[in-house]
Length: 315
Image (cartoon, rainbow, N blue to C red; front, side):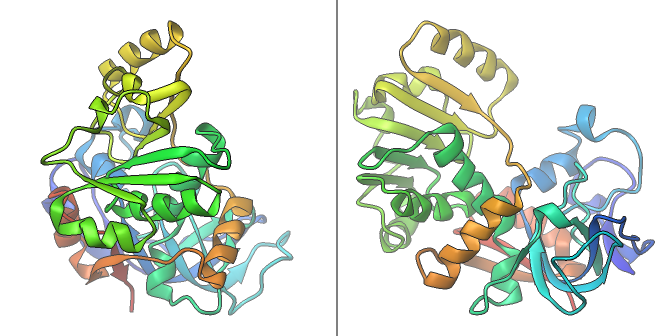
């Protein structure tokens, strides 16, 4: 099969397009003919070597955390899926492996693509939507009527987070973004929009039940005064030094700080699928690149200017 791969850590130019072995599904896995994938910041952080203590020194590595396509083969213990089914999910191998013509998914982490959703839209969903759902539901413990702030509201995770907060019953959702994306954030259901170039949300004292920093640009220490009593700060990408400081500060407070990485969870993806099918949430795509141009897609993602998701199509 053809795939994007790299044989050393480094900038986007280390990415290559060429032949790699087609994976063989284990008994509890499905082999997917990939039709679409996407770029997430974790992809270029892995490629840069920022996470090499976790990802190790074994090469080549195929990046990519989002798979959408058709079932090409099933393992001997798989009964939910059959050849030809439209499926999507997030590989649980710890590195990615989605930016290729074929990828494997564990039966437990895959879900059926909703009928009304295209492969390109589906390829934008798994990691970002799972991150948003788990941040707000599992870690933020969102309750009906809660005031929620999403920092980075126009990004891949943020665009889902606004909509999922509403779906979970948030009373007021505030989105923080740049001025060019304010209308997009409002169209997704945000009740208020703050321009991060002009307004500092951390100065809104005791205002929010949940602050979800979807871009890792802030900290619990900076945000704690903006949280109400028993408020929750959630993020996915803090600096290690910030994490330590935040945990110490939270230990002395009625408020809490949570850092997590999204789990590959098929039941969560099934809920997201139901919302997509019902039109409760929608996918926002900024740009689409062919698989062969993944390096350019990485470079664009690293600018931080994407509004919504960056999708890769696989012919």
